[in-house]
Image: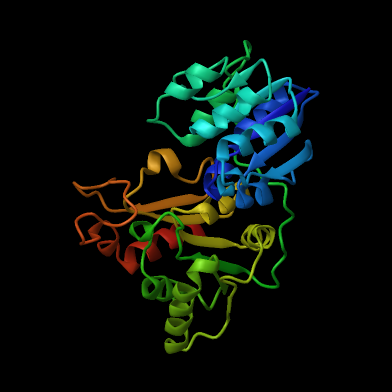
Length: 324
C-alpha cells in the first residue's frame, strides 16, 4: 500500500508526527511511505525502514508555486492514501493534484474544498495526539495505542557521560533562555558530565556566548558543535547524551525520541501541546505568567519575564531530579 505523507516543516513538529507514522505502519501492514517535506524534516524522517522515497519540497521557491505544485504532484503520481500534516493551502492542492482518492487533512476552508477526509481536530491537546487522530481518520478499529516519538538514526556513543545543552529555538527569541544561565547550569555538573553545546547555523553566536561563559568559569571539558553538524549528526549526538537541557525546540523532541533524560525550559509556548511527548524522564521548568502563553516570536511586552524569571537554581533543581 503506497502512502504519501506531507511532513510538517519544523524539525520538532516532524518528529511529533512520528507516532502517527508508526500507527499508519501498524494499521496498514503493507504500507510503503513516500515522504515530502522541508529539508530538515526529510533529513530526520527519511531513515524510516518503510520509506521508499523522500523528497524535499522546494515549490515555495518557484516563480509560480501553483504550476510547481501541479508538476510535483504529477511526478509523485497516485497513491492508495495521502495525508498532509500541514494545514496549508498548497499541501491540500498537491494532494488533490495527485488524483489520490483518499486524502486526509485537518479541516480548513481549503482542505474541505479539495480533499475527501477533513476531520475537525481540536488544538487543545498535544500535537502528537492531533497528528495521530488525523492519521487514523479512516481506521475503524483504532485502539488509541499511540507510541512514543521515534527516529531511526543510530545514536553516537560518547566516551563519557555527556550533558547536552541547547540554547537555541528556531521559532524566535521569545522561546530562548539565556546563554550565560545555560553555562552556569552546565558548570554545576561538569565534574560528572562532559558538555556538548548544540545549535543550528543561525545559533553559532549564542553557542559562542555559552562557550565564553564556560571559559570564564574555568570549565574546559566541553565541545561546541553549533553550526557544525548535519541534521543526522545533530540527532545522533543528542541521542548519545546522558542528560539534555534545552528550550522548547526541535532538539528537545530529538532527545525525547531517544528517551534522553531532559529538562525543558518553556516560556511563551504551550507545553501541553509541544512538550517532550512520552519521554519517561523529563522535567518542565516554566513560570506562570498572566501574559503567557502568548505564542509570539518576540516578547510583545518587551520584558520577557516568562524567561527572565526562570533562575539557574530552578533549572539546577530540575536537573538534579533526573540525575539522581
